Length: 79
Image (cartoon, rainbow, N blue to C red; front, side):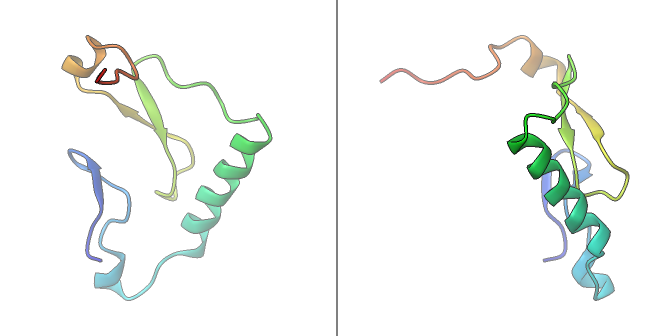
């Protein structure tokens, strides 16, 4: 995998295959965040974004696009 993009310009796994290694610290960062979520210790979402883990920089805020903020947070299609 060369890159995994979830939002414009924010790689989750930014080219680790190109370098031949995946840093253990990044995997542990995601695992610690998941444990915090299960233990109800995960911080609340930022008001205009979401948390991104696995970058090696700890909790990183990913800002939503302005048009996404105008919609309900978890809008579902009713069929």
